[in-house]
Image 1 (cartoon, helix red, strand yellow):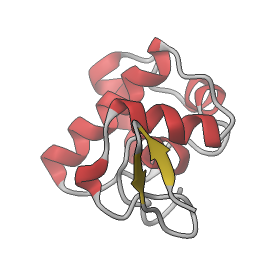
Image 2: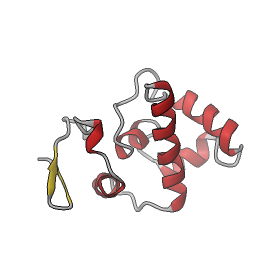
Image 3: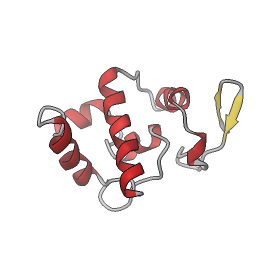
Length: 110
C-alpha cells in the first residue's frame, strides 16, 4: 500500500523505501517516520538533511560507519557517534534514516 501524502500516493518497495527518489518531500518524510513509529524533531531533521546532502554529493547512501564518521566530521562528536544516532533512529541510523530521507537502502554494514 503506497504512502499517502497531500492527496497523492507514493509507491514504495516491500521494505518501505520509495521507488522514485524525486517523489520525496519533507511531508513524505514525516509520513514515513510516522509509519516507522518516530516523532521527528529538529535533531532528526538535521541528520535527514545531512543524509540527503551526502547522497547529492556522492550518489550513494552511506553505510552506518561512514555516516557516523561523516556526521562527526561535519557536525561534531556530540552528534557523530553511534549512541546518539541509535537513539534518534532505533531502526538503524543508515537504514531507517535513509528510508525517511527518501534515499535508497544503503549497502554494506547497515
